[in-house]
Image 1 (cartoon, helix red, strand yellow):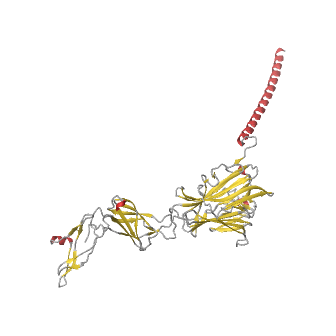
Image 2 (cartoon, rainbow, N blue to C red):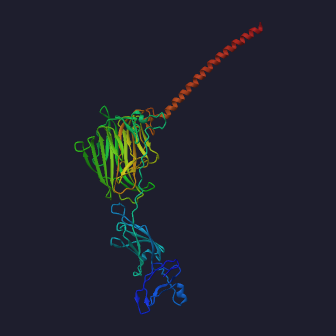
Length: 543
């Protein structure tokens, strides 16, 4: 049997009804011969008693008076599947938000009423389930399925039938597709600048360190992105028992002058356009405090280990805060990081998270702030970016007068045993409901704060992040000369601009007064000289 497209179907006789008659029974493939309604017949392999072979083509059957064609048709009421799209298999170690996904079924005879269709899927693991049909429109159907039950390399049978004709169905076999790997950001290391300006006059690492591929390795006692500031020795930070918040105090002659707060405040799932899909603000943390007496790393004077479970998930979040008593070096993501004495490093680890889609990202929100306990003059904020200024934050400085809290944000992370790019950004619109403050709050001369988002791409099992913070003294200027400065109003009630205007006005007025005085004196001298000359001329004319 052959259709008009040249597709053939060979049928063997099944029953011999007499010495010269045979019956042929077969089930036609779905859609075979329905395009023009005809199936063309031919017979071959006939043999007589003398073993002579003969066959009849379609044309010979017709000219010999035999039946050469079979007319076929199909019903518009019987669902016929021609293809299934989007049938994936999710391994058990892949976290997803739900076990229900949607497949697209294409074919004919579906009608436009999903309530009149029954969908059945026979999974490769032996499970057979009825599934909800969410939409039907004649040639297309959307139906739910469970990707956890689908097994790679095992065929799945998808069947649609009408409730009024339960015994009429045309199953379609499909092979599940392994869930495609997420679009992970591939880390490509690039050299880090060692001076704030590429000009030849710039000195690498301000002459206080060594320039490497990963940036400046500062000499002991110096820190900052370009080793431009000296390190302030601070005592062990005080810490919160119920949340990963530390309070670092800078003293001057045993008097507290600067208080700094570093905290992990939230974890958010973001869509591709940056919209917050889900936000978690953990309230219940457990804390384990260790010291050099019971940990292997003798360079760490104190280690605070916080952990919590995100609400309505199984995702474990671990925040480890270390305070170093001596200068140290830490290896993270194939990068050497200098840790000055009395500085603080934060490590953030997150286990498998049920992303809604593989294109979403996870964002860890950090809060950093500094506050003066004395009548300070100015506060300011500085930022250092690498490339794109939207999400490639390398470091921040929160300054009060000549003292700073410097934070370094490594644009590398460890995702599922591999190094990947981590985007860090300043959050200008974040609202911290726990403190009734926001990132858009105006700083004062004695207080400034920032919220930083560490953006993590999709991952499967775990992620590790590693920012660190140091207190510095700015050698090359006070806070009032920094970018984004806020200085206190002078006691006279006049702003700096007003004072500058008054000074300029006084100088201009004084200059005008001096010039006017000189002009008057010179004019008087000229008039006096003119009178003497006129008198001499008059005497000469009379004589």
